[in-house]
Image (cartoon, rainbow over all chains, first blue to last red; front, side):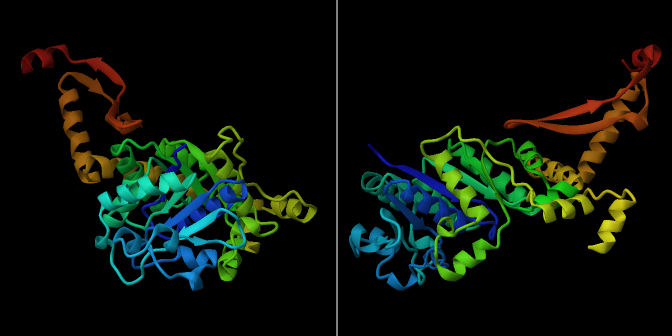
Length: 263
Length: 93
């Protein structure tokens, strides 16, 4: 069976594409799939450090496309999670070194080697975006509940529709207290504005920074709400489409109840 | 934190979230149509002028909105019609 190629994109930078890519990739691999995550941010690579694989890079995606190495030489195997691989971006080239046709050709090979391919798209809608989308059949758009991010998501959703891809949406960095007090767009507000199907809601979580500090996948950290949310997103994307979406809410502990009451 | 708590006790309600939603909806519409707020206002004035030649309308209650469903944007004008200006309409023809 052929693998599936997803692009994870947002338009705006800093909303969580790389975190989402590494977390969903790790979760799918832990669920038994053969997964490769591909850093498409040529010149500004980051997926490698977030995953803690930066000191194992020898070859990169540009080397693969230019036939300077074999695919198996560029795909770094994660030693903590079986069946999880990373193809890093090149740090010294710029985005124009790859062309969409190159990516379509690479995608065909990746599909035969892996069950799941996740393309971590760079910010923006220029050549880097074109390259990341070229090989993908499916797309996940990620945004935060902020006007700038939602606006950019709308633009990207339009560009994906123009390529006959129907994307699904992750809303990241939700602050339940602020939603409750009316000072943050709720997920209903965002989906109302964007008219797109949700695939998951992720709350703002300090574990994300701890995980990137240590280069340890978020889904492996105990007690990370964001990690759990990404795990459920991975399930919805692959094999369990009907898993209910949980809305991040305030804690239910005694202290939290008093805090909530004070609000 | 304390100030916020006091505000809430006295019933002040923050809702910058709803402001954000309204601003976003309009921003996305302007982005798609590539027209500015000023153009939309001019359009509204011209439409009012045109309708006013045929109907007595409540100009203050008039609302011009753009509604979005899927890929399509529709310009929606809502106005209460007070009465018909039969003569004026005929003169104009």
